[in-house]
Length: 307
Ligand SMILES: [Mg+2]
Image 1 (cartoon, protein in one colour):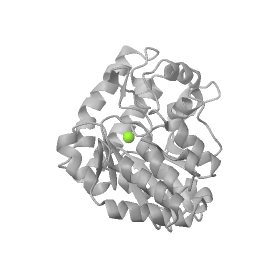
Image 2 (cartoon, protein in one colour; image 1 turned 180 degrees about the horizontal axis):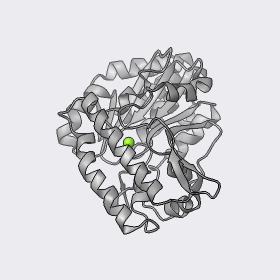
Image 3 (cartoon, helix red, strand yellow; image 1 turned 90 degrees about the horizontal axis):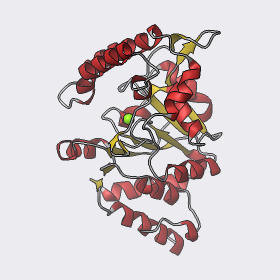
């Protein structure tokens, strides 16, 4: 290993030893990073969840909105809608995050939640033109240093594939309003279908929910054109289901999984360290993710991540 590689690797090891970074098998992580680096950027895909992975869990001292919450909390929607959406969330969110229920059982509940939520939005006759204002007024932000990640991936022509069980219409509007739409961005998510007057009348099928991301034939068909030859994956997520996003992608070789553990760290750290290679606790920025990406992309010494 040459001096630059040594320097780069030790910079990553320093980042991995930082506060709030949890790694069960450091040698395994370093070996995966080295293998992905060796195969080069042409083989790499960055696969990410959106809500509270790319976006912050806390924003301005309050819970950050998800792409669905942007609509659910908007004053442009009726109080009746917001109350019914809240009732659905109160019923199904505990099931989504429960650690003592099988994924199969959770899946049945998730489909009911998504169906109910979309039917409420359609019943409310939500308009495409309202989404821009909803996002502009929403408590939602990308994590700090996301722009560094987006720029690095774009400059190496690495696809940024966002698999989201959220609402693609507001998610993409967030990318637009933060000037983060780049040619390498691909989003697979749930979409509203609007009529000629711009009123929501239907939704995309089948739903992408928390536990089928990356699995349905429709999702795989949507991504096949730009993942050809991308056998190595850096995956970022925050839920129990996110590490499985890459499982059905064809011809994968090395998958390095980075998980954001946003809450209940004490109770869930052990589980998260089982399912993610690197776990980041607390509502941290993208420093660790960027350090991994920069190590993989063989940057010159002047752009090394520093402490
Ligand atoms: Mg998420």
